[in-house]
Length: 276
Image 1 (cartoon, rainbow, N blue to C red):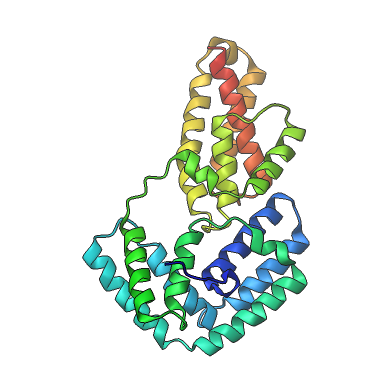
Image 2 (image 1 turned 60 degrees about the vertical axis):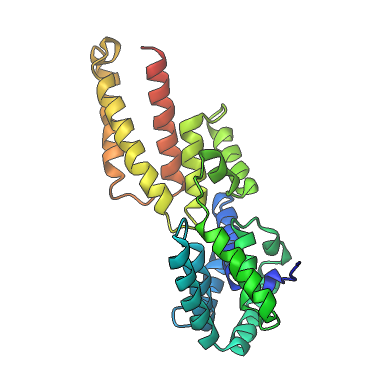
């Protein structure tokens, strides 16, 4: 059975599409557009607002990965009850205001952004629809349970596929214009998590950098033991400056400038290791 779905009437899709648009604005340094998107999100997804509450019903289900089936069914039942308590007319009215705002201030291209897990979002949205029959809702429930109980071991490649390709290419092109050469594996990981951090509040980036910065610190310290470095006062001074920079990251905002510096350190460490 095929179900119809209007993604512009899917609160989770609208939110994620805006987050993706924000990511693209960040890497293109479009501060004016960033400001517009931030104001739209703040206005229409404010806590205790109807769209914020609607969004949480989607997130509760979408964040439930690899759950045991019985537990997943109980959660789905509770989420449906919470959703039924919301005023659907108010949701529709707020969605209309949001869509109008996006169309006027950002343009229709926002709806073309690649949104990970859209298929699951659409299924949940169809389940919440008042137009779905009892039979359709049973089928949709089964489909959702199947999706949220399925194990998903995401590889690095799959994570990369979730990142908007235009945003990724824009950032890497900007970096390459300043620092010639193709990005190597460690730099690619930093770029991918930096772009993705806009949609997960920086969690993936911070988690990765905690380990990566420690690795870089150890590598630089070890380089000080190399004869060609410990016998050169200038090289020792530069290495210590790199260590100071890595230490300062504990209290430094992770903006584009900082990310580029980290990538430079990664490049330096690679170069030193290649001459060992």
